[in-house]
Image (cartoon, rainbow, N blue to C red; front, side, top):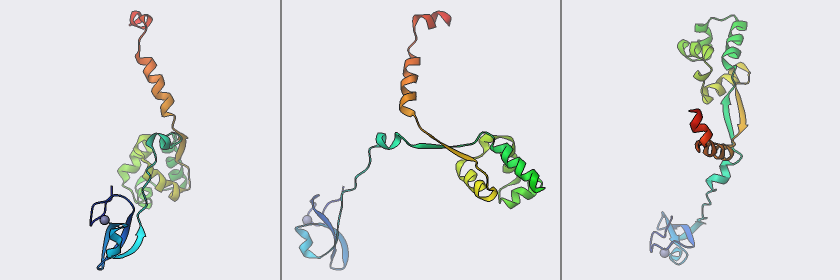
Length: 147
Ligand SMILES: [Zn+2]
């Protein structure tokens, strides 16, 4: 929390030029210098509210296939194609064989270079999932017998 550099008060703060030094001062100390701007309280949004409808980005399931097809169409081998994308050949080989080798930043880069869609978004439903997990943790007598 910001406070007055001169007296330590935490209310009605301003950024002021006090003898050509930028300082945080309260309204009563601001008379020592020239007020530049008031300090507004920073309102941080509640985490839970923010998360509610947050879209989660994930790599499409057939990203490997998509990239391989484009490369084959271009007539380039993996080495030349990797060069074109300025990535390592070994990375391209991984990407073409395993969907999980792509991360979001790289997928974004490849999307631009290859004009294909590699990232999809879906809304997070974390609150619902957590509830379901809890209920599945509590075992009924029937479950114990099955085990
Ligand atoms: Zn003060």
